[in-house]
Structures are given as structure tokens and as C-alpha cells.
Length: 120
Image 1 (cartoon, rainbow, N blue to C red):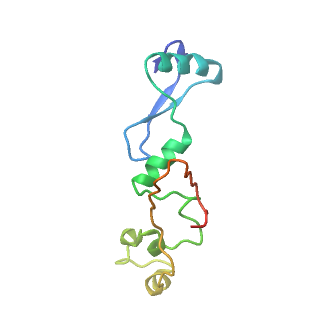
Image 2 (cartoon, rainbow, N blue to C red):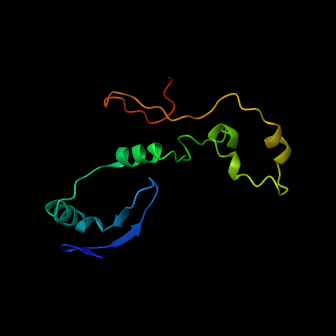
């Protein structure tokens, strides 16, 4: 694809659950592509916006809500486990009683910017 004089690739991206694209443009062409998009009315949202949309949609992400110490039950993802098949750890998974639950919280102040591991 071409944006102004910038040439690169566009990839359909749905990580935050919305229609969108990731643009891959060589560094030497990135500024002209950015300025062309901005002149056409696009605005910069940034990675915090992507994370915010993902969290609002209830999507979990590795390294944020999902870690090696998080079980599918704690993450609310146990319905995606194929418990009708055999796999290593199946008995432990079925016997696990979660002591915590990942939840989405709504804050009334726009100043609250939480990423992960903040104590509530």
C-alpha cells in the first residue's frame, strides 16, 4: 500500500476487538506517511488506546492478565479447555479451585491508567 510517498504493508489487526490495521513502513518513509494520514484526518491513539480497547472488550493478553501462574479458571477461560480429550495436567486442571478471579474494573476518573499488577 501507499500512503503519500510512503510504501509499505498493511495487516488487518483485531487485537483490541475493533476493525483496524497495523502499518509496516520503512523508517525513512514513516514520517511522510504519518503526516499524510494526519492531513487526511487520522489521529494518533497509541498503545495505551489499544490496551484500553482490549481490556474493555474483555480480552486477556499474555504478560498482562495471563502469566505462567494464572490458571484458565482464574482468567475466565476454562470454557475453552478441551476437557473431553486427554492432555497432560487435565486432572490438576479439573481439581483446581481458584482462589482469585481476573475481573475488569471501571474507574470514574480518566486519570486512572492501569497497565497490570497494580494493587487494588
